[in-house]
Amino acid sequence: MIILGIETSCDECSAAVVKDGREILSNVIATQIELHKPYQGVVPELASRLHTEWISQVVKAAIAHAGLENSDLDAVAVSNRPGLLGSLLVGVNFAKSFAYALDIPVIGIDHIRAHLYASQIETPLDYPYLGVLVSGGHTVICRVDGYDDIDVLGTTIDDAIGEAFDKVAKFYNLGYPGGVVIDRLSKSGDSM
Image (cartoon, rainbow, N blue to C red; front, side, top):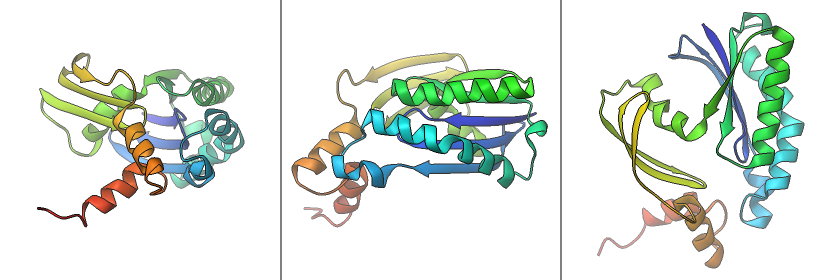
């Protein structure tokens, strides 16, 4: 089974081709970081417009890098929640149209759940395991007892850790994205 995956939940336009749920044949990421830097944060309208401009070429590149043709695909998986609404709509609508043209199914993916299972592709984990997600606008700690058995132990109710890093970096004029800058600075800090 060969699946095309599309991810447009925030500021990166991404497509990957995966065989039999384990073998990554390609992974193409078009990042928008440089275009959001002047604002020191993601501008939702800009993000969705850039997805609209880039998604066709990103998908085409992912299929080409996998050495495949569109007709080799068995299904399209696409992030459909949570995330920036405009960005998600670009990915979902592209995926639906693309799959319709090929007469293959579309699979909606919760991108938070996808983060929990991404490690399973290269290094399968035994259940139960602790899932800790620190991804831009989402911070979640959960116990994963099975594929559909997830217990959320804690989550942020306002800003996620990624957003907090961006705000601290902005306040101190450290640059964007804040998490990368603060992580780099932490490695050269005084251990006391």
